[in-house]
Length: 176
Image 1 (cartoon, rainbow, N blue to C red):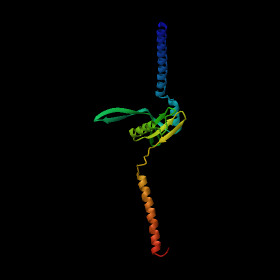
Image 2: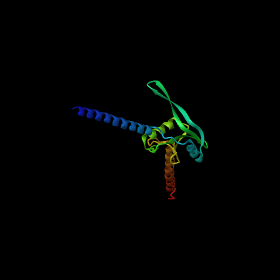
Image 3: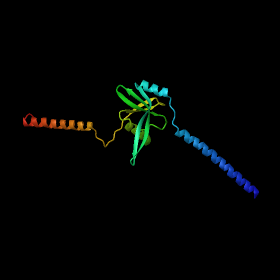
Image 4: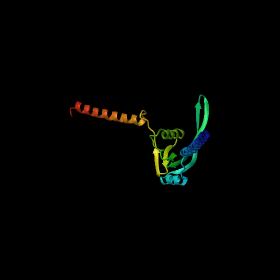
């Protein structure tokens, strides 16, 4: 009977030890995933310079005020870089993770849209330091029709009515 109790106690202690060891390893793995990958500032700045951009600011903060039920909550959005090429200014978002950067991935897309709203006077650039690629990002929504669509529609309408008018004129003058 005593051997069974000792075996049971040793089994429980061994099980607890294994559980503790596995949970610690899992926590370290999750922390490694959650911690953003560091990027080389020199490498990022070199890529921006090669693409013709002049760095205006690093770690530029834009204040965001979120009002919930009448109470303001002040926060900020931090841009990795703000840059300028010619007269155009851009916010640079550094892509650090392997899976990050897919425009169809909702979290990344929302992040870029948040930058677009917070930095209204700036365009958005995504810099993939690992691949050495720089991408300009724009958003368009299918339900929105901008002024260009209106002018294209008017131009097409003008051409159609112009052709009809010319045909009518030729028919009335019996030249056609």
